[in-house]
Length: 249
Image 1 (cartoon, rainbow, N blue to C red):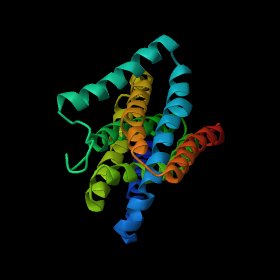
Image 2: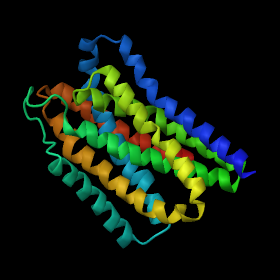
Image 3: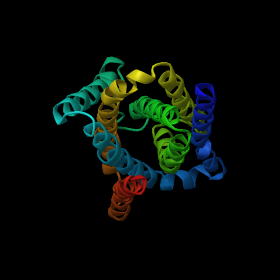
Image 4: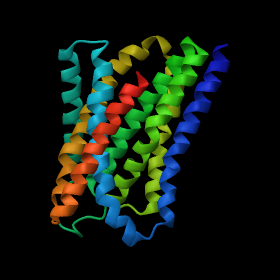
């Protein structure tokens, strides 16, 4: 029985991982057009990251532990991403040509990998309890993964990666969901304890990336009209994640 449910959990995470390749649709778009709309995709991604942290990850973490613990783990995540930039000498590029790839591209991959790992844990625990629960949980995750993966791909492109490299890296990040599912079945009794730390930790990382890296990029836009439109896309990211949360309830 466990083997059958493990197989279903792995199949679900493999399908979810393949969603990361949705960015391939941009291959047919000319680079000139892509970079014109990129700021709006980045704005939506910033909103989605913050919305994901405040509407999804943190409420889930607060349902199983105290606000003090959640706050501590969130700050650990925030500080960890800050140190990651400093220790590895990944600094912001204030002018074009300072570096080939912006640091937030790699930071987003780290944060998204942890997030996908958690998705795998959640799917594994759901299938372990009940097969129908596992299927419904997988469908719910797929529903919010599609726009998130488009946003993640946009962040990597905006950070300086070419389309091919962004697709490969984004897929590797998505593959962590499979690791999470396997790890979940191996240590099923400890999943909740692990999630208690990873949920707010990931939220802290997402908040750091959005507030420290992506939003400052939006401020570089000199056109008032495009800036207002980018802000609307930012709000759209927040609103989307809010209603996704409501739909999942």
